[in-house]
Length: 170
Image 1 (cartoon, one colour):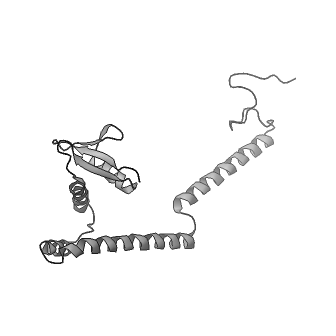
Image 2 (image 1 turned 135 degrees about the vertical axis):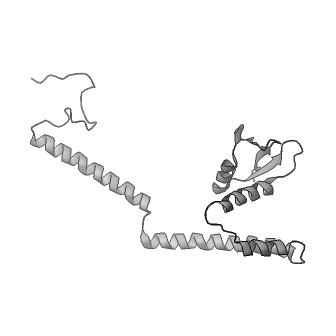
Image 3 (image 1 turned 180 degrees about the vertical axis):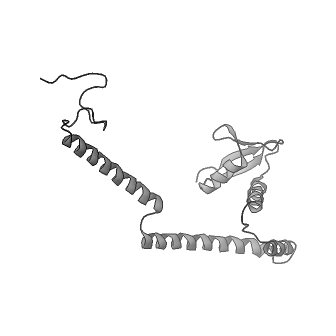
């Protein structure tokens, strides 16, 4: 297994990605998560692992914007578990529940994709390609009707002479 990507956190709260030798934002860290990158956030001075704090910061920022995932009653229940005898079990339970949820979500998306066919984006690309082909055919038909020989100045990228050169007809 490869080593995780190391991100150093400095006292001024700046994050430095050692793999790309550049400062990054908290949103860049979120993108690493979305991309499935394995990383650790380390204190630049002490080397302490700060990954959990940064992940919690990302969650807190996203909970403030839009519709929250963690409701107030749920957060209250989680706080009540700290110091309780069940605290040790709760983390494992939540981790397993989240894993099961993501597996079910992937299955659902796969089944839905099978029922609905290609994604809207794929369909739009296919439509655009078909429209482009129809446009080229229409242009060529128009030029044939106008008596222009094929391959001469049609603007379709199929000209036989080099740009700027004129070919004389005999």
